[in-house]
Image (cartoon, rainbow, N blue to C red):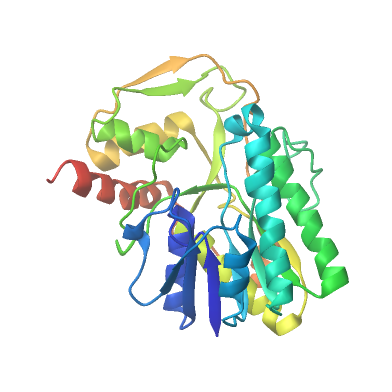
Length: 326
């Protein structure tokens, strides 16, 4: 089996590539390296330097023959999407249309799509399952939801089976240390905490300590990126076996607060990690936790590495090696 991973040089993409390789698949990466890194490419996988905004490049690579395609190439900063919707419309919507059209033209039978919990918006209830109302609060989430709808139509009209995998908060790094490239300009909590621990930032800003949670800080569902990656393999195998499309939420089903993550990081790293409480950020819900029951039932998926200490330790290893052991 040969899998094309679009965006396979990025943070999540490189872990997805690793999971398919570990499962015995042939893998080719297609990436423009705008945010991905050559450091994240594996010798066992092929690599094509290309851009999803160039349909001829997509057609050329798809024409080589693949059993499935994983699509992870997208702009992903929710706040930025509200300031520059035109950029997100082009990259996420138009770029995905190019991928889907190339895949159907080349008779690629299965597409695994990197979706997001952002399709749901503010929670009406917890935990968030697949039937939760889908009312995105930002343009990034809107693009992900529209792509899911597009895929539904292509399934009906062109026979393209797909899996829309809705990530909650991806974190951590390969526990075996095989992924080496750090994210550029990270915005998520854990890599920012690591940058403070490594001395790259002076302190962590905690956005609000007056939420109706157990310690006043926001609670999020963090899922280890290797656990996410394994679900892509399981989703492809599900599609191949059943010839059915599916949409699933992926989270650890356990909420960790910002202050809890900060305290665990101080203990795991042995670093002080200065922090200050600042005002709330507009649009931040107090708590987001997933239900992954559907993934457990259909994909036999279970997170193995999504406890706080493994998330922190697997990330700190790279930051420590990169910045403190030179």
